[in-house]
Length: 154
Image 1 (cartoon, rainbow, N blue to C red):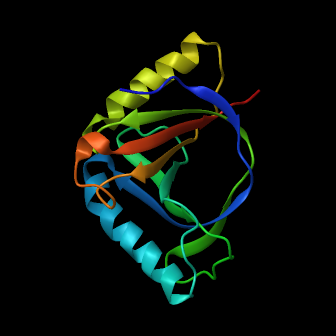
Image 2 (cartoon, rainbow, N blue to C red; image 1 turned 30 degrees about the vertical axis):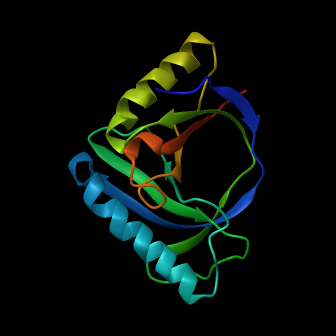
Image 3 (tube, one colour; image 1 turned 60 degrees about the horizontal axis):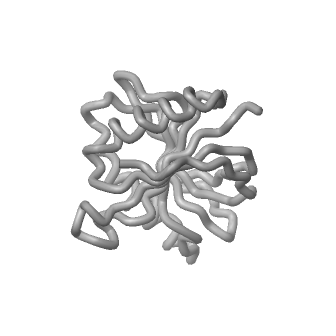
């Protein structure tokens, strides 16, 4: 389900994002429109994505999701509507890659969190999902790849 996690050091990068707080059962209905709105807003500014889109969860999801739909950019974006300029700061993270459809992400996170705990790491409450291969690039959900990342406190 997931690849063997690894500890990495990320570099600082600019982003554009839309912040959303929604009940768990609405996540699928807001994700698509949110990413379309985000991509449309940066395209209107003549800015291209500098990589795949991702979500930054400000806390572990419970009955609600408090997160940002984000895309990396090379040029700072101007705030427009719900779209804001942001930054994914440099940090020490633990990362894995989940193979499969989005419906399996909950199980993949459980496996990943178990690995983190078993190996004695201490993550912050935030988490990231980067959708490197998905329906936008391949209709076969067995080919989908999602990077799962947690910042480490040490």
